Length: 64
Image 1 (cartoon, rainbow, N blue to C red):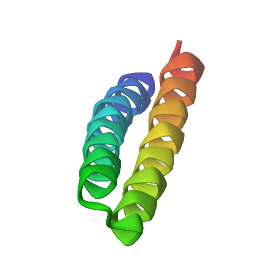
Image 2: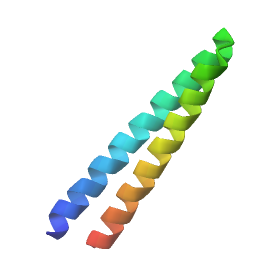
Image 3: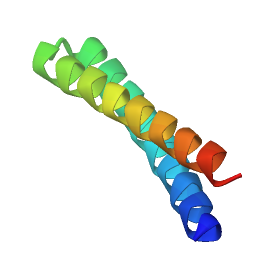
Image 4: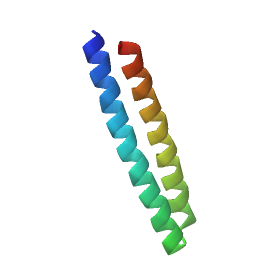
């Protein structure tokens, strides 16, 4: 059970970090093109990624 939770935690950390990077890129592209909607979507995606990464960290910590 603990290994499964630890694996889920690692997976959430990786997926969350990827979402954060994608969100930062969208935000930057929106800024360069003047597309405020794209910037907001990028910021939202960055926050979702940060939350998912934190959940993964908590899952990994609780599995120890």
